[in-house]
Image (tube, rainbow, N blue to C red; front, side, top):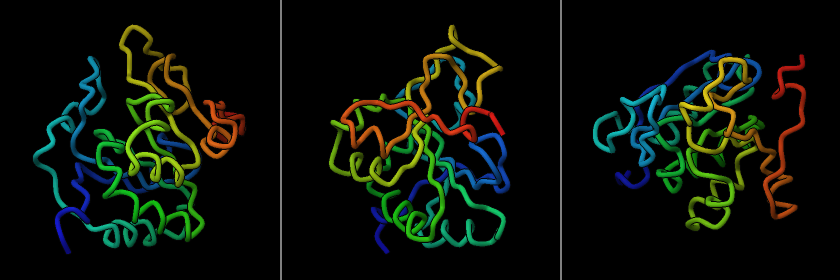
Length: 175
């Protein structure tokens, strides 16, 4: 397998309950161009380091837990590795997993971004977009760190051609 078909990973959290509703697997990719002051994961900024994993290896990690029904891409910046993450995203969606992704980009940037970014965006169910802004930090928000970040319904956003907020109680903290 070529390096281009592998994902540079910073880490994996199994059984996460903070990166989206329910029991999830969270994949932290290595490398981020945003360098947000106050970032929760500054160790993921360098594009070197981490470990290389194939989409198949990461899919196998998700399948280990029969209670896991959701996967979250975090980082680092997942959309900086959009081409490499796309096969994994397709595997997850084909198997019925809910896919969420954090990004420091805005939805509008990704919708008009590279072909790979757009293709990955099309696989995502829920996008938490926007850079972390320390001045907007809040510990009272569900699944996001600062007030400027949006929780978006990607399918509806793509259909309407504009960013559409996610309205599911699961994502809003209404259980």
